[in-house]
Each structure stands twice: as C-alpha cells, then as structure tokens.
Length: 212
Image (cartoon, rainbow, N blue to C red):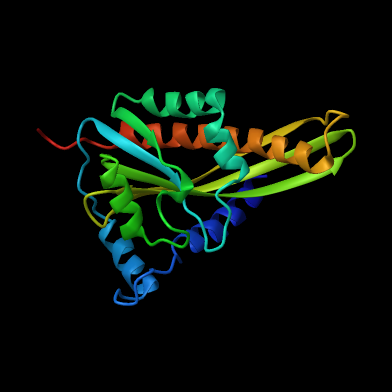
C-alpha cells in the first residue's frame, strides 16, 4: 500500500506542479515553478496564527463535482476535516473554497490570489486520485491526495505531502453500482483529507512562527 501511495504521489505532484499558466504573457509554468521550488528551500516563517484556504486544484475540463468535493459538502466530513486543522494552535480559521473559485488549469499565482481574496494567509491545494473495485455485494475504494501548502503572500512552497484513505462496505441493494462506488470513494476521500489535515497540523507544530 505504501509503495502504491508513493507512486501515486509522484504522479500527482508532477501534475500539480505542471499546471500551465492561463496568461500567454507569463513565463512557462515549468520554469516559474522550478524557481518557486528553489525559493521554497528557505521559506519565511508564518504568523503565529494563520488562516488556511482549502481548495482542490482542477485540471482543464475536469468536473467541479467529484467525491472529494462531496466530502467537503457533507457537514459531518467537513466538520471532521476542518476540526483537525483547527486543532492546531497555529490555525485561526479554515476557509473551504469551492473548486470553481479558480479556473481549471489555474497556475499557482491564481491560487494564491484566490486565497488572498478570501483573507487567508496560506493556500492548501490538493489533487485526489481514486481506485475502486466492485466485488458484489461489497465496494472498495482508496483515495490518495497530493497536496501543497502555499504562502499566499509570496512565491514560497511551504510544504508538500501525500495522504491516503480507504473505505469498504456492502453496497445497498437499492443503489446502482455507480452510485455505490461514488459513495465509497467519498468516504475514502474524507479519510484522506482528514489524514492530510493531521499532516498539516504536524508541520505547523514543527514550524517556528514569525516573531511579533
């Protein structure tokens, strides 16, 4: 399982960092993001209390309606994910931004701008990948989430990681196969995002805040 997640992480991070800019006047994405990666080696410390903007990074022509989005629209799942982030004494607030807040295929500058518009200090952007199996009467799904924590006020990449989640359960007899799989993927996505929240909290606990 660990090797599978590592492989998925490598693919997802490559796709996240390979976002193309939407403006032809900007420099090529690969060059600008390589520059960001170098600058992220010595990031400036964050404030003692931060506001996090949480959003899914969409590829071009990708839907705004996916299992991860459903997980964040579900009150129970959203409260669990946000609650784990807020459990960190470093986090003042968490703002869930819908995936249509930034255009599909957006570059990091657009993501940062959306975070700043929401009044956030950092943007936690993620991209999920799903696997599922249908073995009646059971459904199984896994979700791997590659994520990057961006400073909304600079070009720094503060932290990157991958988190995984899995779900399994009997499919209700009155549900079509596709709906049963969607529900299981939603549960896996909720677990993956909760595990991501724990990793972010651990990072913030180890990061020394800026002096007042």
